[in-house]
Image (cartoon, rainbow, N blue to C red; front, side):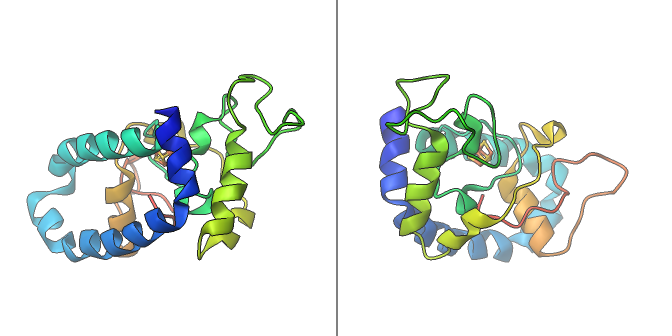
Amino acid sequence: MYRVRRWVVRHSRLLEVIYQGFEPLLIKLHPLWKRLGYERIETPVRQVEKAVKGLLFDCQMCGQCVLSSTGMACPMNCPKNLRNGPCGGVRANGHCEVRPEMKCVWVEAWEGSRRMQQGERIHVVQAPVDFRLKDSSSWLRAVRELTHDAAPASRPSRSDGAVNEVR
Ligand code: SF4
């Protein structure tokens, strides 16, 4: 998986283009999702998302994807789960201080972002991770956000929140 992850970062522009085609399709299907019920489709969509993104990004299903701002390198693979990195412990060779065999996720993020059309988004300061959203679908959250179809405010929902990212 690590090798796939690194391949993805090297081809971050390609992944960006693919997502730019995928997101409008998801949004177009909003009336269908709504008809079926977002709560009902959460589980199957989450499973597909987990399989695809797990394979490509070693996705941990944080539920608030920021891949478009991190050069297609998932920040949840940082042992410190830093959403804004790198920390001060990056080795001189660009590797992680906690897992020295691994290149720092944030070094990867920077390199990936340099290949992307919207790579400047790496400068956006990310909010801390909201662990209430863990194991929820970022894709569905994105659709609801972009169609202004927010989930009930009383629930720390897997489908609400304000993330404006590639998921
Ligand atoms: S949903 Fe979260 S854990 Fe999964 S790839 Fe995106 S940022 Fe990483």
